[in-house]
Image (cartoon, rainbow, N blue to C red; front, side, top):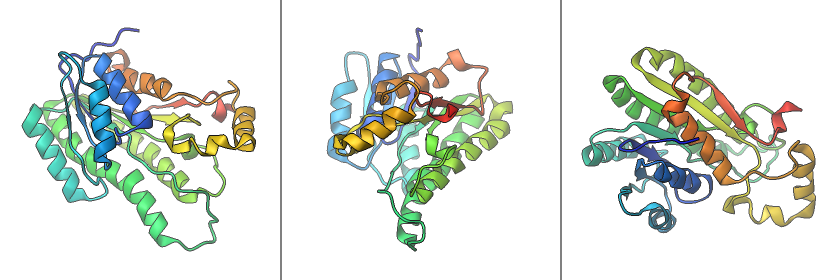
Length: 252
């Protein structure tokens, strides 16, 4: 499937590594102008070096997205530099280690909610207002299978990811009359740097493979393909949808 995003400005959060880096690379291959953000400046620079090439402009905007003021400043800078934003990919997120729900860790709850949910809302408000004014745009948010099915000992993570599905549907309905599409991608277990150490545990790998009908971990590139599809005109009649890229995990 050929996707042509030439001239479209894509703002991608969490682009430092893993799924975010793969999304940035696939958007670049499709011709998009990239505006990338992340908290790790060194890792973000490596993404920049990977995706930049002849005729493929990219710029970076490091920042902590859990701060609404920072989000406002970042979007202001992107619009000043590029003039418009056509695509917003909300990829930044954190997954804390498994923990018991009875443990009263309010700091952990606040941290997960701040990055996984509040930051997405801040970004959608800022970029969405711009897109609504232009009467065009596409927003794709990375949720998780944890937003739809139970993941043991991950109540903060699952709650935040489930909330993103509701946010996606609500915004899709509200902004459809203005030509703005809002969708989500819900990955299953994807082999990334973040879980590289965990994947050294044979028991963990066996459990995931056994519970995934396709019998393997997914790749960041497989998630990126779904994101770019939903962001493109190939998905022009799709909004409010969550596309599960999970090897069949959620069918059971």
